[in-house]
Length: 616
Image (spheres, rainbow, N blue to C red):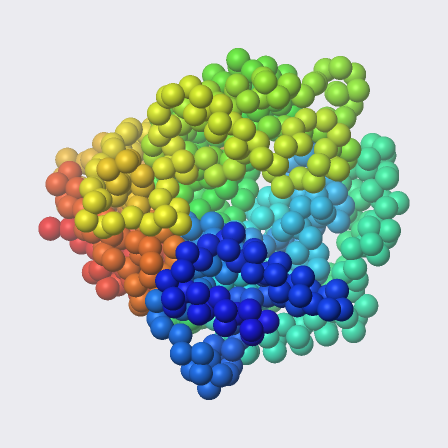
């Protein structure tokens, strides 16, 4: 291993044209030379070996005499899956434990080993099950993997999946969130030691995590679910009757973990949970902010009331609009799930439905998971498939709908995904192509029409020259706010960074000496007994997101990309200037816990659920 690594270093130092193809040839040459037929060099082990020597054997590493430029080039060459941190942060996805769901969607998988709507073959689900769904162990395992792949993990976005977050007890929400923060607050050595102790704790109690053993144990219940004899919730009550893991974290304990993370080596720069629109209330939003949440994924699936009813969604587009307004007023980034090919839908209706999502001021999400409905054995949709009431679109129909959707997406919205991580073996009917997005993008390219959505314009791993960037603002109106999308763009219209500024409308004429007006209640908010009133004063603007793209730069250091070069600061200052020019007296920011220090340095003060800065 060392001999091969030193050859790579020598080639880099000599200025040779070293790329992935060159590296593959070197690995094959070393392995062909092995007399016993074993692999001497594994490409995926080169970087972990190098990083271990650099961290633990300083004398050996110093003897290699590697320049700073060669060190950076070597890590870049050996890094696996560089797009994992191309968005500017290291993303860690974790799953909550199986739990009853208050919904009853016909397309939803019912895998009793998993939280509702998830399947045990999905990669994140497999990782969670190996960790007994323990949040600490999930974070520790993912950090270890990302580090071994050569990724910087100083700034972490936590994505919490697992059915409907708001269905879980608040005590579990606090404990789960607290364990995520605690895992990131510890040193590498402390985290490894704690993870070892936890695994031992689970093993001594005989709690299984072996995939085959878990599948065998769940098989009788799963067969009854698939046969329609039991619902997921009924089966859950038989499978998980007792609490096996002690879970306790008070609000004070959680806030202490938050404060520790503000200066921790690995800071949380985003916390995402998923829920349903009917569970988005003012009270729920306040709880999410107290937990440290910055983005909310909500399963909208459709805006057609008939389609929603046919698919068991038990919600209307009016209630969805109410939820979107609440999320925006509380400063959250909205990440909606939208499905094509639902029961009762057709390609033309799907295209019109999506156009409404991205053009109607009542919705206008910041981010979209846009994916086709597919049939899995445990879903109630199987009955409709067998009766001929539902059929999967042909590939031609599906691609055509998604092409129309991509072209309709505005420049302030990002299409994050086009497929679920469902294994092809679990899909009975529907799209099984894992490269569906590439197929759609090729079809979009063939139209010669310009694509505006964010993901297609991100600078990704290429980076950008700061001097070539220009700052532009796109303004658009929602039902409750005027939104300003500020973006740093290259001459080719690639995005290097952006800011979402939210201006409540209409701005009061002069509210400084007037009593606060009673909250305005919609029909939907009256029904659920809560108010969509903003958590901040009406004369205060809100920064909902600041994001700079490019390779992750370590904290307090300038990396190869565009981070830590002042682009984020400039976006914040321009947002403040625009809010002040519009007559607002203060500006709030929905800061992640790990970004609080950053915003304090920009003149923001802690103010309850947010940080606030007065405007001149």
